[in-house]
Image (cartoon, rainbow, N blue to C red; front, side, top):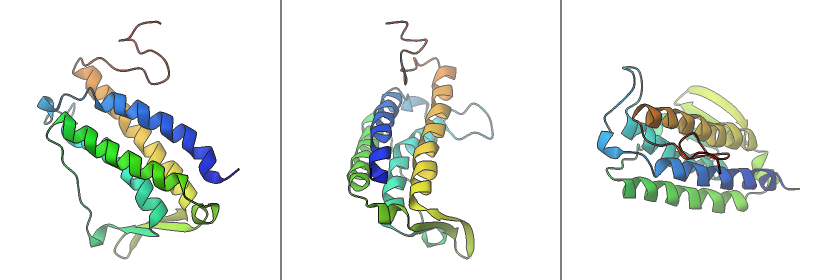
Length: 165
């Protein structure tokens, strides 16, 4: 089995779950945050929407150097937020479906100029930096939504807001 074939079914399911969460983000509360050290809701939602691009970057380049610049996306409406997510997700899935084991096993580096954060095989970066990172921030987003009294969609079955089916 190709490495990608072990990742694709999970990633497809989690992208669908993530989209359900993003559909409910009340961007009229974009500046809200639960704590002074927390990200604002709008920034967190955009971050969740842009993380699929990190899968693409991981699999098509050999490094990310923040010293060379990094564009932070913006979305003022739910339509813009979902378009950002949908575009990045489609691109990420297309790239993932065409990535060889040889590429998966090659190294990828995250750096800021001379400071290297890590160098790991692309499969580890895809799993940790792109997939697990997405799940982490999606869960964070669910807490924000709960605190704003926005009904939470079920991820792995019905949520408390959806009741039992």
